[in-house]
Image (cartoon, rainbow, N blue to C red):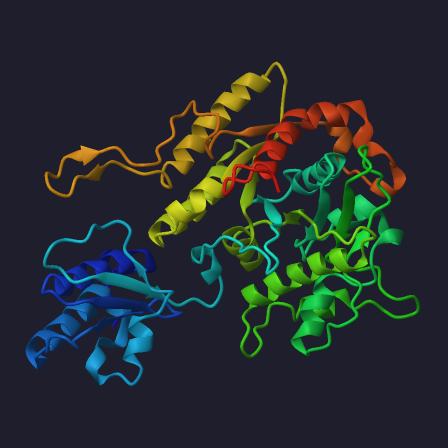
Length: 462
């Protein structure tokens, strides 16, 4: 029988309803793990190791969860840990997260959520890259736009040359596999290495990655003479006389292999490119700055790049509804997964392609952008929290004001320049040195360089 629309529980309704039931069980002093499967259905796992649960309450909780969730209740809505074969592994899973919207209460058990998805889990697995085994530090910066067409790839190329001019060993890795572009923009097609990121992902899956040519030193000569600019493209130039089956490779790169998921495979591919620079460069120096040109959208590549692989994420956007709706969904996911505090301080908005016209002056545009950005970021900032003893509201630990120019929401500007639309580096050599390009990117280069070369972990540059 089909339920009336007004009474039907939909996907968005299921989680808060399941959480409410979980907290009823936790109020009895029991630890609860709420498990959501890949279809969105929930089951309660109750830890009864320390306290026995009788059949009556267990049946009542299962019945309540089924009534509340309808189609989004699992076939077995309640499981007791004592009856599970691998309960300790399940209850001790590092992927299970506490509910960030509720504070623990005295006498209550804990409530955690284990969310199983087909894709996208890496948005909620936030971490900071670790130093290399020799103690050296490579500072990785992701450049990401929720939507394409915001000038992210061009900005990556401009920033890469600027950082090389400062004396850094810079590696640019093109992770926009479905729409590769930064490789040819920096090196030209003839100077690309024979292999690309897709080759590393495909060949490593069958233990055949030795000897790949993954990174190439560009022909750019940095002004200081100390820097180097390398590129690791998504698509290599291939081998003469052999067809380069890019689409066939791309269709296989996202597969997990035994013992290694896609996130680990992508991280290993980037590491292999960094090692190639160290091995093949005349100086023998490893890259100290890596720029990751990420795929747009809420995609697994962007998830891994931002959440797990970078120290800084520059988020590109325009002041329109699509930008703020998209970032709003992403920020809400970080908040609900409990990762807001881990992710927010390595984010920074970039206002790209800023117009300056009588209809919309630049200053008015930036003011509007900043206000919308602050509203969007507010879900990641600390709300007032109740004091443990008195319940009195105290200000959160990280609540930047609208005017705080060092806060994640404060936009770094890039001016719109029509001369950059449809740019082809092969037919426009020296394009980055032109006056209109330097004017458009002046503030962006100054601010991004400061963020990248002043490592917040040490207050020193890389």
